[in-house]
Image 1 (cartoon, rainbow, N blue to C red):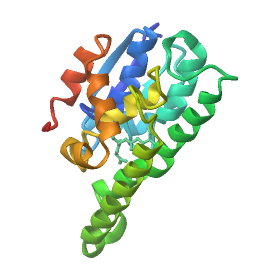
Image 2: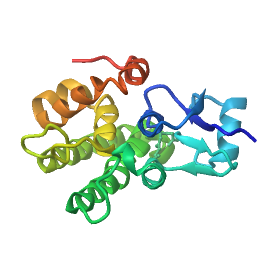
Image 3: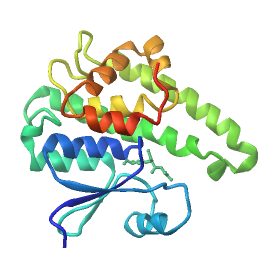
Amino acid sequence: MSARWRLLGCRGCGSTIAEAVLVLAGIEYDREEINYEEAGPARDRLLALNPLGQVPTLVMPDGAVMTETAAIVLHVDELHPDAGLLPRPGDPRRRDALRWLVFFVAAIYPTFTYGDDPAKWAGAGGGEALRASTNEHREKLWMQLDAAAAPTGPYFLGEHTSALDLYICVATCWRPRRAWFLANAPRLHAIATRVEADPRLAALLSRELAVYPRD
Ligand SMILES: N[C@@H](CCC(=O)N[C@@H](CS)C(=O)NCC(=O)O)C(=O)O
């Protein structure tokens, strides 16, 4: 059994959020690149661990499997409270952090789940409409999140960075991409660029996010 954590991820995907969490917590891990869209032995390995076929999928040193970015954030925050992933229990900002963390995974993330490969859910005939409606809905959700960000920043919760900033940094590279955020959700755009400049994360993020066009 390995003493290191093992992350199954896909460049620039939600696994980058989990990877940034591990980096901030100082957890040593090995990473396996998986193209979850491509049938084959790598996807079979992923499916054996996570029947949803999603990344991130983490195998912990005791062999336990963890999926779901929000669960990973909460678990690593418990193990490494000094990593600054979430405000400490009792701090009123923790309530906000939990609210928006769950908002991300319960409201925003599913728009990608159903919009990325819409024909899977709506059939070939309905795919285009599902993609358009999830794209449109997501823009509203991002604007709601932008309005909830601390008005003077520099991070979503205010003075201190948190795991929410990691979601913002990574997911603003996805549809509708950074130029849209600059025009429509400027607080989120500012947070995303600030996180990319964090020296603890710069190497990881420049490698992972290089797959996306920038402003
Ligand atoms: N709720 C999951 C969502 C993970 C997820 O949807 N990851 C995407 C990549 S960014 C994926 O694996 N998509 C493939 C699929 O859903 O089939 C989380 O928060 O970790």
